[in-house]
Every structure is written in structure tokens, then in C-alpha cells.
Amino acid sequence: MADLIKVENLVKYFPVAAGNVHAVDDVSFAIKEGETLGLVGESGCGKSTTGRLLIRLIEATSGRILYRGRDIASADKKTLHDMRKEMQIIFQDPFSSLDPRKSIGETIGKPLEIFGMGSKREREEMVDALMEKVGLSPRLFYKYPHELDGGRRQRVGIARALSLSPSFIVCDEPVSALDVSIQAQILNLLQELQETMKLTYLFVSHDLSVVKHISNRIAVMYLGKIVESSPSLELFSNTLHPYSQALLAAVPIPKLDRKRERFILSGGVPSPINPPSGCRFHTRCPWKMDICSREEPPLTDRGGGHFVACHKVK
Amino acid sequence: MNGPLLEVADLNVIYKTYEGTVAAVNGVEFSLEAGRTLGLVGESGAGKTTTALSIMGLVPSPPGIITSGSVNFAGKNLLSLSEKEMKKIRGNHISMIFQDPMTSLNPVVTVGVQISEALVAHQNLSEAEAEKKAMEMLEKVQIPGQRYREYPHEFSGGMRQRVVIAMALACNPGLIIADEPTTALDVTIQAQVLELMRSLKEEFSTAMIMITHDLGVVGEVCDHVAVMYAGRIVETGSLEQIFGNARHPYTLGLFRCIPDIEEETSKIRPIEGLMPDPLDLPSGCPFHPRCPQCMDLCRTVVPGVLDDGGHRVMCHLYGKGGAVHG
Image (tube, rainbow over all chains, first blue to last red; front, top):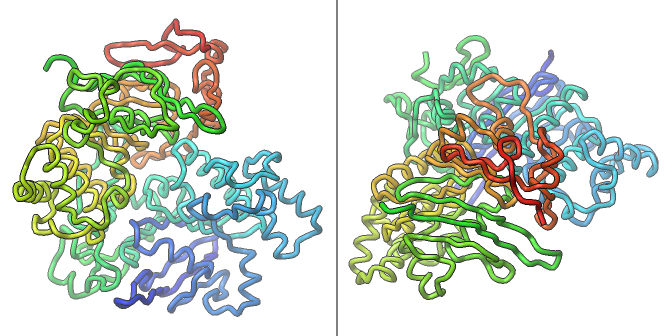
């Protein structure tokens, strides 16, 4: 499969009084058509910013974002408007991402209206079909968001994202706000839709078990950088970067016989305004060497598409 | 030790709202020995927090009403105490850790003063003594004592939660109720805080009720588990009994719908349907509309509790009896 999305040296700085927040700092990756790239990391690592940059909800400071070979980052307004049909987003919080004064039917049909698809009548039919696709009962057409529970609201968000038959969807923590039993329903729905509609996902999440479940490839971010990226299963069976190892060891698992070693990091994430020199993880790294605070380790392929940025990993 | 430290029996709590009566807690029963940790697990609206607030005497009223039940703590029924008597218990013998450390700390008071407050109120310490003790407590939660005079905004999320833990432990209470204490934290910080709670719990031999939606967290810190659904405890037992031999279809469903991080799974099996409307709970077993093994009996009769060596299950698959839901 060809690359649907290719990101090259993407940078996003947010200027604040104290300097620049290095939210995304020289990130490159590609997503193949029909695949899911999972982007994991903790709060403030730049994963959501990356997702938003990809569909240009915010402007990149520098770098290129190629969608089927065309650069989104430098596209003019008209081109961007047309490209938006191809790329959509599902937000984390199904409470704040729906307009409280629009009915469910209106919300799902809005993108169709903006792009002038069909007559009002035809659009209503399209909305009905979308609602069926995501498992919403047609009687909810005239309901408002506050009348729905979190799981159904997230289904509305998914239906809206699907309305223009996009190829690419950024899923920004789409199940984090949901209870576990509902979370599983939504994950299964996203997987079914991917198969039937040949969708490509960027799946942003802090939850490693969710990301493992849904992704083909996973990239681990720390302080605006990708520190490790590899095929999904490989990342779990052969975790190389010390941060990924710590992240994995920190996930509490509901089992009596845990196979993993306990590995608890000390301290918190440093400020993204003046990130540490060299390797950004060196302040918390148990393997720290002299070189780590001086030189930034490049993200290099250790074979089989398993990339790691660490001086220690040979 | 004579008998359990905490014994909750037949607890029923309702909330009277304009839309109707919410049956939040329905006949909850459990006990906890001194020094042990009970994980209270369930999804939003299961009644976990209301159960905790009932123990603390903090159910907001109105709209909340404790309609029946008893909460025996160290030989006293807390539900029969006056507010004045409860004040002597809260923060002293029982303390609470809330989910969000930013909203449970006062932003305009230094963390040191917030920790010493309970010491001055309950232990008759002078302010100077309380300050010394508060600094010791900060060190215990791995925060340098000299940060006593700093304000909550000067700390990171994980450190704030550690300040809250120091506050909760200051008077060396017999019981701590922790309501989703790590839900707002990142995983690596969560691991630090859980590790700290585990070691302090042993050092102070404090009993704990850990309220969480995360079975993983339960596995890390608890030795007993109670699974709640629609205001009832549907299954309870030791960690080994629940994690090794779960019986209730809801508990089994909860385990199945978490993607396994250690094994290869292609599809997760969610629990079908939604949490029931608390204004209008289903008749019979509250889980029957979502239960894959639902029988006719389940629709009309509330299942009794089968007790098998401390492993208690409320399900018709395992026991007979029960009362017709009125």
C-alpha cells in the first residue's frame, strides 16, 4: 500500500510569555492507506497537536504534510476546503464537541450542507443512513446532545466525521471519556468502519492497551519528539526505548500474575518551554550516559521498520 | 482485632430530583478489616462515590437521603452521629482523597497550612508543632519539607495528589477513602502515586477503600474487591477470588472488554447496551437487560447472594432464592 499521509520535519511552537512551547519538534512519519497509526504519550507530549496539525486545524511552524503527495501545510484556502472532505476528526470529549443547540440530525448533516451535497431531502436520507451505520436509532434524529449519554454522543461525532466519506480520520482520544464497557463498543465500531469504508486512522491516545488493540503501527512521543516507532506487536514484544519501557511497565493490568517488571520513573515531565538539551528524556532516564545530555539521538531504523532514538540502543 | 473496622449493612441511598427518585445505592453490604484495602469497582453511576459519601456523612442533602442502613466504624454507627460528632471523625479517623487534586486543594492557602489544619483541629497541636509535623508528612510523600510555604499551583499534578495524600494521612486515620485518586494523572505518574500509597498504607497500617473504574489499579493495590452495578454490589471477594475466578456475568464482561496488553487479541467483546437509567431501574436483576445469560427468572426476581468462602455473588446462575422486587 502507498503512503496516504507523509509528514516531514513537522514543527509547531506556541509562543508564550516565557518563550516558545516546543509542542511538536521535528517529527516525521508516514501512514499507509487503510492502516492505523497509534500515537501515544502522556499529557503535553504533543500528540493531539500533531493530530490537529495533520488536518490543518492549526498552522504548522514549519515542515511538510503530504496527503496523497499534495502538501496540506502550504495549500491555499480553496484547495484546503476541498481537501477537508477527505480528512476529518473525532474529538475526545463528546460533550464539548457537539453544538448543544443543534439537533443530532442537523449536526451530522452540517458537513453535507456546507459542501452542498444533494437536496435537503436527500441529505436527510444520507443522515439516516449514517446514523444506522454508527448504530444510532433513527428516532434520535430530532434529539439534542444533552438528551444522549456519552457513548451515543461519541457515535454522533463519528457519524459527522463519516458524512463526507473521508479517507483519513484523526481520532483524538475518542474513547478516553467513556466507561470501559462503552469504550469497547466504540473501538469495535471504529474497526468495523475502517474495514467497510477503507479508512485510514491516526489514533491519538494515552492508553497503551487501546492503542495496541487498534493500531498497525505505533509511535511513542515524549516532549514533542517521537522516541520510538514500530509495528504494533513488535513494540510490545521488543520494547527498546527506556521511556517506552517505563510507559508500558506503568500500565496497571487486571491480572494476578503480571509478567512485566516493575519500572517506575522518577520525577515528572520537564517544561516544554526549555526542553532538556540532547536527548529530552535524559533527565529521567535510568540509563543516562554523558553523551545523552549533549547530543540528540537520531531516530534510526533498527531493522524491520523499528525506529528508536536512543544512544544506548545499539 | 475484634471484628472488622468498618461494617456497612443494608445501605440504601436515594436522590430526590425533579425528574423522579434516583435509587443510587440499593442494599450495599460489605466489611473491611483494619489495615486491608478494598477496591470498589464499577462504571459511572454505579453508586461507588455515593457509598463513600455515606460513610463520610457527606451525602448532599437535599437531594440525597439515606433511607436505611448502618455504617459501623470502630464500634460506632456513623449514621446515628450528630454533625458535631462526625466532624471529630472526618479527617481524624477517616479521611478522603478525591479525584482531582486541583479542585480539592485550596488555591490561596499554602500546602503546609492545608496539611497542618487537620493536625491543629484534631490533635491539639500548636501551630509550630503542626508545622513541624506537616513538614514530616511532606517528606513522607517525597516532597522536600521546605516547600511547606508554596501554593498548589507551584506543584505538578502528581505532586498535588501527593500533598492531598499527606493531608489525608496527617492524623494517622484508621481508614482512608480514595475516590479515583489517580484517574486524573498520567500513567507514569499514576505508577509513582500508587507505589507511594502502597508503601504508606503499610507503614501507617491504614485501611483503605479504593474507588476506581480501573481493574488494573485494583490489581495493583487492593486485597479485596467489590464490583458495583446500578447501586448494588454484584460480586465481592478477595483479589484472588475475583481476578482468578470471576463469576458474575457483569464482572466477566468488565474483564473481557479491556484490551489485553500482554496477549494477542483481535476483537474485544463489549458488554452490549447501556447502563440502566437510575430513575427507572430494571425489575429483577439490574443487569438482566445487558446480560448474555439472562433467564426468565432474572427479569422478575432480584437474585439472592451466594456466599462461597467469602466470595459472594448476586446472580441467579449461582444461587436460588431472592426476593420479588416490589
